[in-house]
Image 1: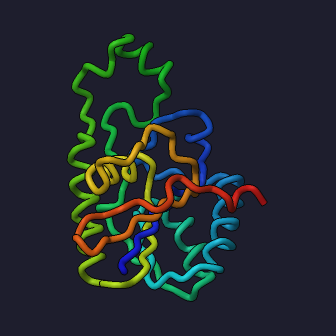
Image 2: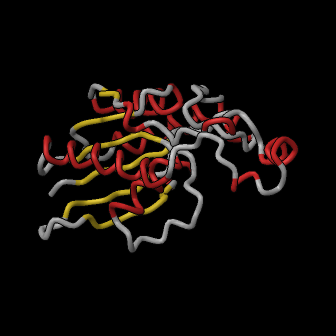
Length: 192
């Protein structure tokens, strides 16, 4: 059975500030590095065969920590990048309202559509599942990417909860060819 573990990267200073990151390459902060270490400890007790990651440093550092514990290499894939946020990257909600007004979301500010993000996510995961049938594949990415991809992959899944940093979501390819979600937004490793 093919299982994919979707992991959101560790926290960054911009996450703490509620600043839109998108494709801007913001590194993990000290808390994020600790989260990645705790994730790695969890992963060390699980079976994983392959690790893929976004090429942005916050995801890649998180993925490398996890992969080290299993002696696995990390393969980067630009399709795993966060939603491109155009002109809003680097801004907070308050700054967006100040610059563009309270209806800023109605403006064309160069953001990538969530639908396009979900499609590139489906393409990437479909490729990994086809390349590694029956294997367990860890994919480290970003909150917007994971949610957009899950909405396409498992449409009936309630994704209203904000994904926590280093959360693990498990999806598996059922015999009928549909994806099913067995675990969503789990951060039990952070409780230590």
